Amino acid sequence: MNSQPHETGKRSVPAHVAIIMDGNGRWAQARGLDRSEGHVEGVNTVRRITEIASELGVRYLTLYAFSTENWNRPQQEVATLMHLIGIAIERETPDLIKNNVRLTMIGDVERMPAEALERLRGCMARTAHCTGLTLNLALSYSSRWELTDAARRMAADAAAGKLNPDEVDEQTVSRYLTTASMPDPDLLIRTGGDVRVSNFLLWQIAYSELYFTQTYWPDFSKDDFRKAVMQFGSRERRFGLTGEQVRGGEISDSADR
Image 1 (cartoon, rainbow, N blue to C red):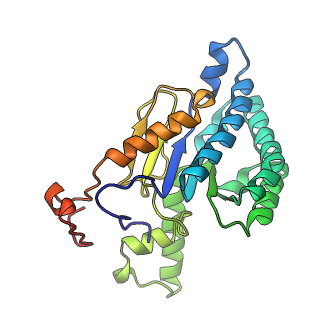
Image 2: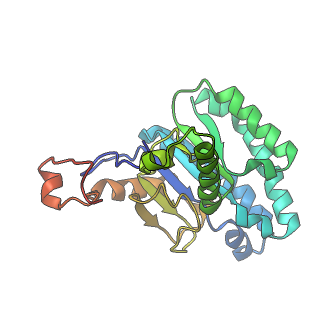
């Protein structure tokens, strides 16, 4: 499912938006605050962007909350962030339920502190019945970790006779990824001014539209999100076809994407 393009041509609202939430620490430092204050303010941004994404009809919102590389940051900052994530999710759970938002998460989450992980799993259980927006948190995540893990499990299944190596294709690989239950992102947003994807959903964003902004995550507003979505809606997504083919309605899975 994941490796197939959703559609060619233009689409006003992306079904799946992924965001690299960058700039919390620099936002705080620019104001003479401790970096942790930036993470606290970033939680408020998560709330409002979840709200506007749901209002606009986005079906999946994946937020890069903590990478596997982030474990190498100062221990106190990591501990503060882990505590904040757990507390914030538990606090927001009633509103998530009220707004019909389901929480999921991807990543090597067993590395996370038990308290934070317990709070997150509690929210997932309490929102499992929700049928609106899926808020997907990427925690202790990196794409290279994900692809390595997928390759390991594919190899184990092949050795056990559950998988025929000769039949492995893009759809097979997608089924072994942590995002197997959702479509690939249509739009990737990165805040904070850096222009790179930082080991995030490398397989899944192969045909995503990219949107970079100088705005730090704590300052990223609902209007900023609307602007990104509007720009997405103005782009022509060709997936290897020509513009003439797209405008003529030709859609071919065998196209050179």
